[in-house]
Length: 597
Image (cartoon, rainbow, N blue to C red; front, side, top):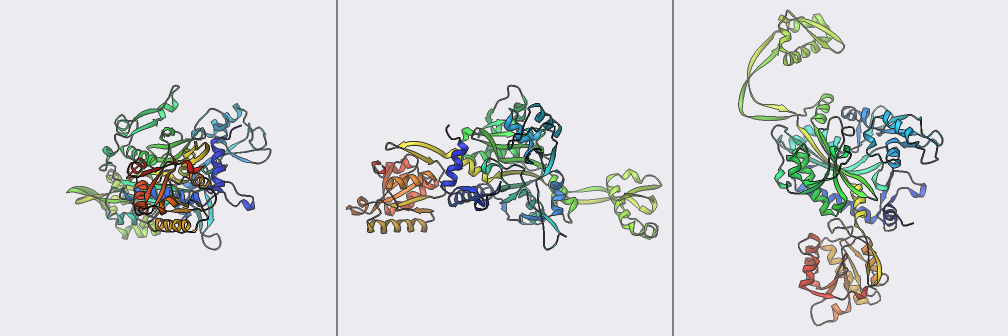
């Protein structure tokens, strides 16, 4: 039986040093992976490409926050109460499983995550689902919510509980009062962060697709909802494949092929900011090598969308027959900053300057504390604050002889005369607004997995089957391989080592290899996605003209002879997309590829 795409990825990743299960010497542990030399380089290049596009080119800030934060942060954000997955435990072997995944894997049902627990339990019974581990029926077993947070303690003892962050976003939100100063208190502005996040997954699976430790690249775009609009024209003509919620729930639903501009105009994409970042993301994914024929944007169904999100879309890639989420785009409103403003002792607003000062009527109170103090004791200050809030919210409450306010669980009645309520005219130059948040959130590990899956190729070169990775030069782990044609001629080795050193000095990542036949060395570099190889041979050093080398392109296996003095500029142009390999073939002499055998 032929190996599946997932099996081929796993075999290649382990053999060539892309990624493999961590702590294998101790039996391993599910959901944790180590990136080998090739994978670490690929992952770093993906992160650098994302940073260049979403931080540098967009003019956004970048921070690097801690991965452990104190408990109050996650009380405010809601993660302690609502960051759950559905767990069902096997009564036979005791293995825990994620209930929605069991349904999706065993039936034709999609997005079971969005269903209520009662419906999930009913589906398990209806389809007679059993434990994948031991085969025990799961019908009648309770499905429970399981919080995914990793808990720890900060400092000695257990007096200061903390949690490993489940997303990088909260590290941006909690620092907003300071970050807005760096942005000169002007909206819109964006803050990016690339870093590790942790979720105690019930059943990690599919290699890098669902792990317990992973890397996110997130942008939190802070906007004034009444004034700020994106430069939608910059992405309006980008053609995309969308899978709206309406199509997902229709009997004959299908992918909608349209442009970003049309989708926003027609209301398919409800928010212009979301549309803008879908367009930017589409171009970025294409630039790093995702197969766009195996890519789509899927809108969240109402049941899977966070309660605070007005609209959410996922970027999805097809791998091994499944669509996997590789990024999410959410319009989060003012939920995050408002929640932290309620719990923290700081200002999470931005001052919006009016075009012209305004004269407004303001309700104020000036309570007589000489009366409130003796009457209410320690609660007097709280009563005074409650009176002011009531005046701002409901001035009509002060029309009677007494006004009643709540402080904690108690009610207090205060004579209106003591409250000293009045309406004053004030001149205001602006107002404080709580920004809304637009969040593009990218899974770096899943992007790496997708690039390996979409880049796997097989062809024939010189009568020999070849496997190679079609990775973009932007993200390939190694820029160029350098070889002496044969490994037993000293002057070829010396020249090859010099070429490798010069290329490294010019900023290229170089793999030097003088082991085995030249064909095998090419194959090794092909299999890890190295886009170009440089070979030093006698013909290039012993001719009448200037010293030259051959440059080989990975995908076509075509070769061209390039003067050594031109080598750095040619490779820089090829890596940067300034010139194609066909351009180089037109400028220099092509070389026969029969030597690869």
